[in-house]
Length: 92
Image 1 (cartoon, rainbow, N blue to C red):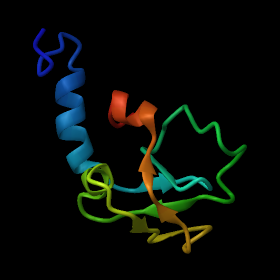
Image 2 (cartoon, rainbow, N blue to C red; image 1 turned 180 degrees about the vertical axis):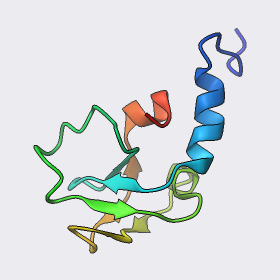
Image 3 (cartoon, rainbow, N blue to C red; image 1 turned 90 degrees about the horizontal axis):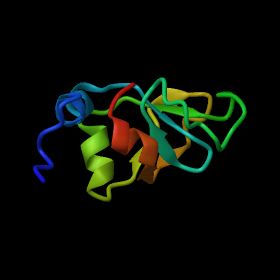
């Protein structure tokens, strides 16, 4: 099975989308999400979330880096992981 090919364009969306994505959201649990992610199961609203707008943030988080928020309601928040739904889907 060729993992680099997907008839629905998922592989391409993951590869190109994560590189150009900006404005990630950081949940209260320290998990980064792409904007529009339907997962958002760890909070009822965004009042306790932060924003992360750093070059290559998605890839850097995937490599184990922890990144501090750059804005939002909780600028002290740290992103320590990536949402599994967003990893599997790519930018929404």
